[in-house]
Image (cartoon, rainbow, N blue to C red):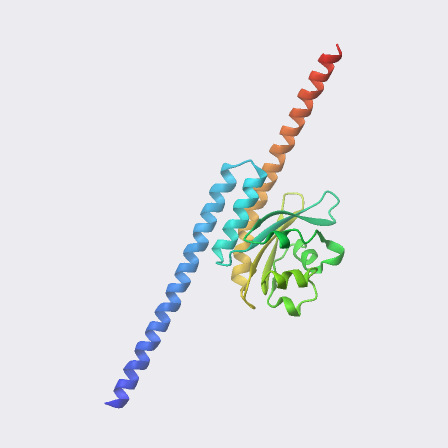
Length: 212
């Protein structure tokens, strides 16, 4: 009888453990599907660059249940990544400085076109701001490229407070968000460029009229 009790208790424990694991996976998948839906809806309904970037960072962070993410965009020279949007990060961390590709192998690697996972920030020499990363409570991160029609636009990062937090599947999911975001970012940039050109045209026309 004792052996039977032990057997059934072990079986019940295994069943509960399996059910909990499956439930966790389902909830994770549900968050990711919701994030992709929200991203698709956001990027297709806005031509504001700031709105698009804020939606992307928020959805990426919430989908992976980390609460922290950022987007950095390349400058015109293609040498520096400047902060364009952040979610859940302190002001001090956001203001830590630009990411110089000559001093940041991690960003350079991601911009080559593939996701990069840092399992433990204390054991990765590719980081440029290790002290600031640790001060922010970040212990692992995933970095993916944002690739436009003519080349890289920047990087999307998602941060976590635990080591070895991200899997290859997580990285591929963030890549999916980045691919959707690239289209929206380029559309928003083109729209803002047209608006600037139109404003300059109107200003020039008014200036000529005033001279006449």
